[in-house]
Image (cartoon, rainbow, N blue to C red):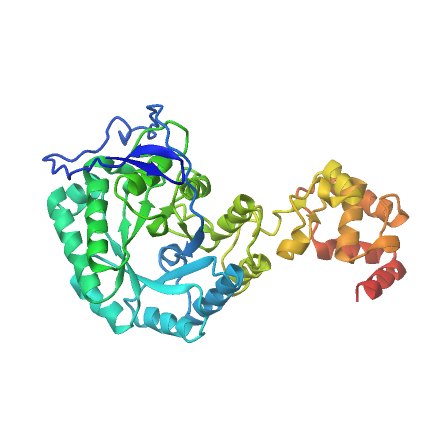
Length: 463
């Protein structure tokens, strides 16, 4: 059947219906995943059109997938981070949902405590196994939506679950029907989708879910889980690894609405952020992330990264409060005891700090030369300079002006006698074998030693 697409203004073939291929032997794509070698990326030069939804948003898995890789959060920590996440998402709720475990007493306490905050966003959802017994937990807590694990690669169906594809589909559909009968919105987690037989299993299964959704009148979401981080975004790459191919195929061939498509990717091959952005660009409304990217193995897509991707793609923050990113990072380090690598974009203590003298000289003249954007305004994180053997006079001057918050006529020039004296001592220490940067307290002590009166003046100004 040929139909006219009002969005693309093209005639499109939308009739082909894929049937489940109930194979005897698992399809493991050994030509791509030999296991003894680095996984290969193959191309067939087929391209699909960009089809970005009118509305896109972020969902969170910090308290579910994220928490599996760190020391367990306390109830208070979960509530505090939930509030910060809500502030970050802004009035439009661009951090739309957050999922929780419901198995332990503490899981339930945290969920209920977050609910008691009265915040509209993120909406609280849960995650359960494809098991009838787990539904009683969700129903008891009156949660409107739950994620359900529905593994879709033959690695999982044959090797882990010891089922055939038909048996797996029948089991999954039975669980989904149980959710629908209880009035719960199912969110089906298509685990390991980037190693699954896309047209032989994924699309036929998704089509059956869409039929159930139409019959029940209850939306059924599909989370595309790149469990091992195998997804790639190169134009013309083949399924099952093509991110854009997966999103396009589920929307076009299985009829899954944009708003019901969500991408969840891991960072095993450093592709979590670009894969999530590509999912948005090709038709998924939601991308699933975690704060700081914490999660299984190499972690999930960092939520703060997708906030920046949203602003870059849309040209607006749409009311999001980006300063919450800094508060979240500081909370993780101060209250959770989580060490953030200093150079981690947006959240590391040194992400906008330079040590190179030539860069410091440029920033001393105009920080826009070497700072990615006004980090002080947007993130409440002023650009910084770390003093080491390559910082030069400009680096020390920039540090002093920044540390004591000197502005306008009060700013110190790199040729100031105090800066010259500080640099002489810094150079001497490195000549004697020092190999670490100078900390703030060390530099303050240095000023005291050089000119105590000047130090008192600077301190008075800062106060």
